[in-house]
Amino acid sequence: MKHLIFTVLALAVTLVTAPPVPAQDRKPVVVELFTSQGCYSCPPAEAYLGELADRADVVALEFHVDYWDSLNYMWHGKWKDPFSAPEHTQRQRLYNVAIRSQSGVYTPQMIIDGRLEGVGSHRGRISDLMNQAAKAEGKLTVAVTAQGGRLQASVSEGAAGVADIILVRFQDRAETVVQKGENHGKVLISRHIVRETRKLGIWRGAQTALDLPADAARGDGMGCAILVQAPNHGPILGAAICPKGPLS
Image 1 (cartoon, rainbow, N blue to C red):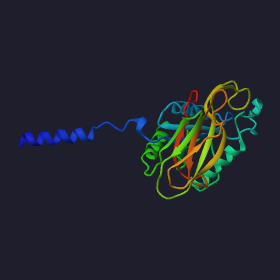
Image 2: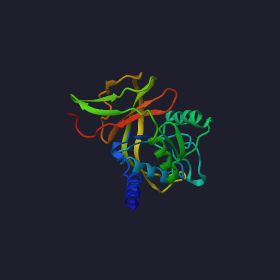
Image 3: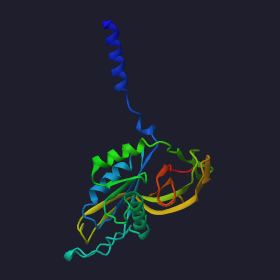
Image 4: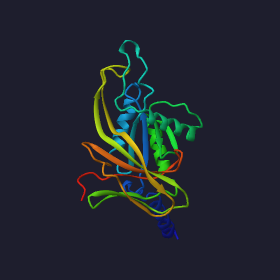
């Protein structure tokens, strides 16, 4: 009887301590950082995003907003972020309406899978949100492969619904010497800097495949990602980074 108890306990310990699912087997979590080179508290968040950009289980994207460009910082003046764009600010505002029910925005802010948000420099909190998003049910499998000298995206079938298939083109890395504003004198390193988002089609619940435009990842140091996102800046249902290297 005592031997049986020990056996059951050993089995219980084995079950509890079973290894987690490897990161490479999880469906990627999308982390969007809204930032600005004019924001003093943003560099730590950008450094964190740079680490996330190297993870296979994360699609990390950096959106530079434009509302810092016109702010004057004492005698150091204004600094116009060279990567800022009004459409990035609009994307952030729409997210905040959808997630926080308010149009007010702040930097550095990270949006996780279009569902959750937090201060981008608060690593522990963001990590918890990423783990929460990774467990969401019904996530789609998205893949981007090279076919006949072009990139092709595929999206798995899923529950009935409609979502936009979005191409995101980004610059892999940039180093900027900031000469004015709150970060004057600093050298900032950015990763996966979004330069364009483009709607390619609509997913309607069935297995879907489409060819990406020829310029999807063209250009020195450029990369791309595919997002499958519910309308009106809703939840991101699936995502993938485009493969690097020459197309076969």
